[in-house]
Structure formats: C-alpha cells, structure tokens
Length: 390
Image (cartoon, rainbow, N blue to C red):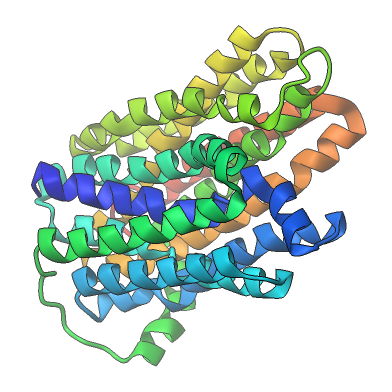
C-alpha cells in the first residue's frame, strides 16, 4: 500500500466513527433543540451504537463477497446520508433514525481494515493495519474536541453536516485512490451469515481475541464514559470544552501505539498483548488520582490508550493472518465483542461512580483489564502456535 492510500483509509475510519460518537459532546444541546427530555437523551447515543452493532453482523461480512473498494465508497455515502437526516431533523424520532442509519453504515471502518489486510504483503500487514486503525482512535477521541467546539460556535447540527460533507469527499477520494480488491470466490450471503456463529464457536483464537476485546474496551469505555464525572466535580469544575481537551492525551497514547503493527509483523503479537494488558491494568493506578492530580491523570490516560491500541492492532493482525479468506467476517465478529464491551463500560462506570466515587470506577476499570489479561494468557495456552486457529 502507498502512504496516500493508508492516509485515505485512516481518514475514512476517523470520520465514519465520528458519526457514532459525535453526538456525545453536544448531547444536551441536541436534546433541548429536539424537545427530548433528559431521560430520552440516551436514545440519541444508543441509536448510533445499536446501528453499528447491527452493521457488524449484517454488513461487514459483505466484504468477503464483493469488492471492498466499492463497499467503502457506498457505505461512506450512506453514512453521510444518515448524518444529513440527523442534522436536518425537526423531531427527536427522525434524528434518532438518522443516527441509527449513520451508525449502521459506519461499519465501513471494519471493511476498510479488512481491505488493508487483503491487499497488504504479509510483512507489512501489521504496519498498515496499525496506521489505518489509528484513525478509529482519532475519530473517537478527536470528535470530542472538535464537536464540542463546533457545537458551541455553530450548534449541534453543524457537527453532523460537517461529518456528512467529509463522508462525501472521502467516498470520492477512496474511489479514485484505492486499488480494486483481489478476486475472491463468491458464496451466498445467507450461508455466510449462518456460518458466523459456527466461526466464533469453533475458532479458539477468534473467541479468545473477542473476549480480550470485550474486557479491553470495557476498560476503555469505563474511562471515557466516566471521566467527565470527576473532572466536572470539585475541585476542578471543568466545562465540556475543557473536559474534551483531555482527548488530546488519549490521542497521544493511541497514536504512539501505531508501532504495534510493526511488532506484530515480527511475530510479537502475543507478547505485546500480554505486557500491554498488564500496562493497561496498572494505568488505572494513575487514573485513580484524578481527584487531586491532573498530571498523574494525564499520564494514566496516555498509558491506557497506548495499551488499548497496541492490543487492538495485535488482535486484528492475528485474526486476519489466520483467516485471510474471511477477514471481513472475522473482523465483524471480533468488533461485535468490542461494541458489547464498550457498552458494558459505559453502563457500569456511572453505577460505580454513584456507588463509591472515582476510586470504585478506577478499580472497576483495572478489573476489566486484569480479566482481559487472564483471557489472553488462556488463549495463548489453548491455541498453541500464534495465529493458527484450532
């Protein structure tokens, strides 16, 4: 792959995932504008997440049947269409439907990763996946900063109009920059979907890596869904824009882990997973100090996001190497665990904070990291040689 192609695909990932997470920094303003009560605000967030989960199961496997370059182009346009519906909605129900559509087709992220795995030489696969996947983290964390600022200047609708415009531009760029996908034997769509369950149940590597992702992103979700709680309380009393700036620390850590792809190319994916999960668990000791030291918190955020990205890239490298003919299906199944873990972290972080404060939330995040490490060790023992499914 050329550097230009990697850059386009990284931007595709960043913009597409922004369509799912872009509502979070402007949630309250959107709810007021659409006439939604506080109890109904969660539907705006859930719509994109539910759409995304459905897309992982229903749309991502299409990459094993059709030219992924064409799918990337079409899915970007449909993501943008959903964003336009949300941005122009006059009622809450219409906005929710638009965000669900945007989330459904935002799984273009996983199709892009599968495309990278398919066209990359074996010695460069990890490097290319690491670079492109970094766009996901840029989107998740960067949109908190950009959307918060844009929302204050031009309103929440401007956030989704910008996302829609970027989707259209990237669809054009992908169409003219990416090479055609390698030819693959065709299968029936129904048969492909029916085989997903058997694939997860019968592949120890996929099941193990999926469970690692479940706990990994439960820990990640615990941090980023709950961080606003201690920062908005005494002694800091930060506003949404100031809290959003902490995403810069997360970006620094996550982008630093792009080298994890090169380590995976050298056959170090399993060792990297082990020490990164241990690092993730330990990072919560720093994050737990949010009530009195911002510097320790920032250090903890950098370390945590570095560890998350290192494990995530290593897992995708192992899975696409083990199943080159079904890379879209295995990535879709793996990311379903990711979505469920993120949802678990978001739900339990507020419960833990309400029960016993940020210390309890930090303990919960560390526990998720430790469980991920335990699963990784068991998976390594049971699968034997790295990357070989049994």
